[in-house]
Length: 216
Image (cartoon, rainbow, N blue to C red; front, side, top):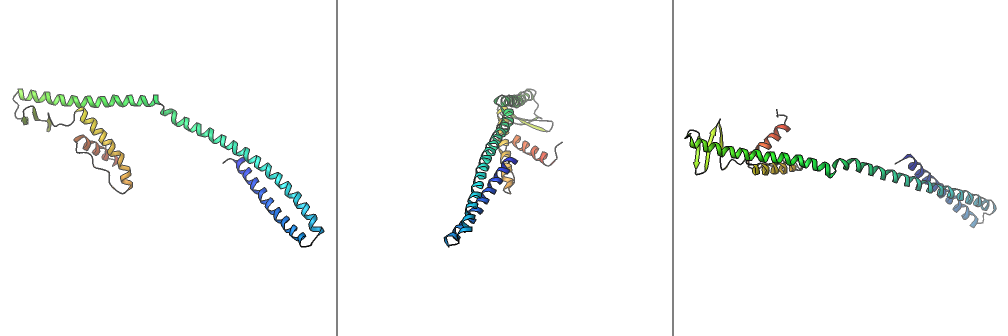
């Protein structure tokens, strides 16, 4: 609220109080006249009516001043609202969002490609191990389904679950899980458990490590 608006409101309140006070005096004097107390009270009534009329004129002036101040204040707030909207929304324009969406698409495509590359590499190396008779590396074989071991890690041609589409599904599920955490914690509950997918569990563990300050 501006100073001009505050002053106009105060002036109007003061004139209204003054008019109410004068009306009270007039009512009292008129009652005295009705009771037979004549000349002096009648003269005072005329004086009080004159003062009341002056106060009413000041009230009209205060009302006009208030209306002007209110209009100016409304115009100022409208201009501020437009400016605030511009400052917040212009950086969120469709063109700016499109840039971020394009960047996200590129990252998503890279993740998808990496997952598919991993799956293709698993299948390719499994085939080579079989061709070379490396049974010491093979942990399971059932037709095209092969599980082999390299460097202490197992690789599964059928159930590796880290292909491109599986990775994107895991990311989407973890994003949804994280969105639920604030509301659950606000209610006194722990965050929801991650999906039973190796990447979901890994992402959740990484998030916990970052939150607890354990990330490298």
